[in-house]
Amino acid sequence: MDVILQTPVLAAGLFLVGLVLLLTGAKLFVDAIAALAQALGVSPLIVGMTVVAFGTSAPELIINALSAYRGETGLAFGNIVGASTVNLGLVLALTAMIQPLKVEPSLITREIPMVWVAVCAFLILGNDRRLAAASQDVFSRGDGLILLLLFAIFLYYTAIYSVAKRALTGRAEAGFMEQVESQHRVPPSRSIPRYLIKVLLGLVGVSLGADWTVEGAVRLARLLGLGENIIGLTLVSLGTTLPELATCVMAARRGNADIALGNVVGSNLFNILAIGGIVSSIRPVALPPGGHADLLFLAAMSVVLLPVAIRSGQTVTRGEGAFLLATYLLFLVWRVSSV
Image (tube, rainbow, N blue to C red):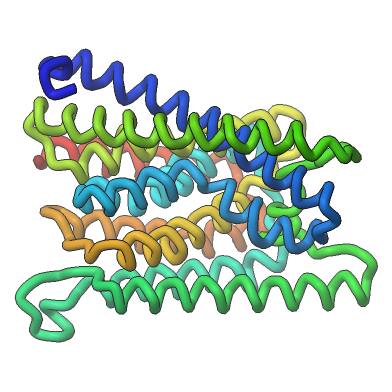
């Protein structure tokens, strides 16, 4: 592999092939696991809160976990922050520009404030030198456990609220839970052997795809003289969020764009708390050069999310979507040019 990947074109080719294989394998694996669980009689609520919730961000989870295991923590950090920023500055922005988004009250009162908590925790835990007089800013294994605890609290609170809401009204309130449960509509079937074969095929695709994606990204960064966090912030983040972008854009074109904000908020919570926690638990993650700027921009975009959501009759307008997109693109150009 070292001999073959001697040019940026070949490294980029391996990255793209691996990314396609990873996304295809992850989709096949998650669909098969969700169908298998429901065929075995597992509650759709449990499936939604476990398999599907983790599955919607499976590419980011797998790439970052593998990067951490291999010691490429700069790539993992860049992808965690980058994917969350892409969700706000590209996925949400483009969807709103296609069709204005109606904001559900639960997102304003619960999910968006929880995003603020997650981002604040990420900022605090990533500032060891300023807050703890440490020699280096590192997300330690203890920090990872704190992030995972916060994610568990969010899941528990959301599940309890959803169950209570459904018991009182007969339906779940729109928001993270509804978005999670609606990701997969499994047709009635008891073809368990077929599901098992799809699970195995998905695992093979995910394993090979993740390995080639990480190898291609790391080699491309070295050949271009860039930090691994820059590749994670840009190419890897854009690649792994393509399924969410496609889903939201298609929903907007069909007149169902309102799922986009819940999708973005839920995905960012998962990226920051769950993936950030898992990666830090596998291997401590040191902040790469420019990492503080990336964190601060993510925090600024998250803070702006609430005013954007409550303005204009709780609707994200086309103009606000254009503002988010322009802000994201300007940051991206500044970040890459400053390397």
